[in-house]
Amino acid sequence: MIETPQIVKTVAQHYAYLHLTVPREEIQRVMGPSIQEVYAALGSRGVKPDGPWFTHHLKRPDAEFDFEVCVPVAEAITPTGRVKPGVWPAMRLARTVHHGGYEGLGAAWGEFVSWIGAQGLPEAQDLWERYLVGPEASSNPADWRTELNRPLSD
Image (cartoon, rainbow, N blue to C red; front, side):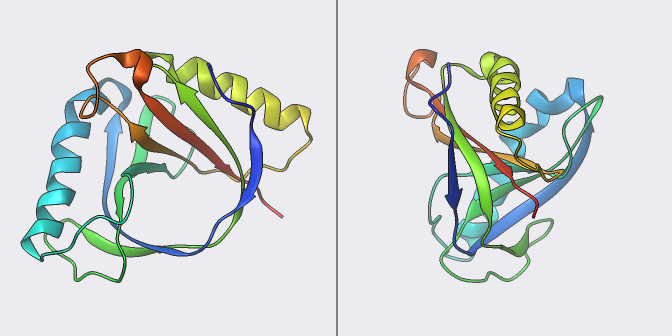
């Protein structure tokens, strides 16, 4: 289930990221260790997250996932191992929130993309998911919340 989508404008945000390109079937295996690697790199520098972590998909996932595992931070970081600094630009985007377990994300994205198309909005190639509430906060998937974001091209 998704909430009613909205069009929003964001502000620029520093973030730390780890870029990965993996076959679709490996995504569940690499996600946990990758986010832990980003958090460990930040911790080694005494940097605290400045919001929920997210994944930035450089293109719509297909047989391969080309994405970044990201954590927002208050200011620029120094690269640490595979973890790099970035600045998420201010942008106009379509946003909704999926309620439920991660296995429902495919259907949620389908519903969301259909809504964007019905509005005649010009989509950019990339997308991202921000994990607002997940298994670290509740063992009940019905409590989980994942924000779905699709930048809009001009």
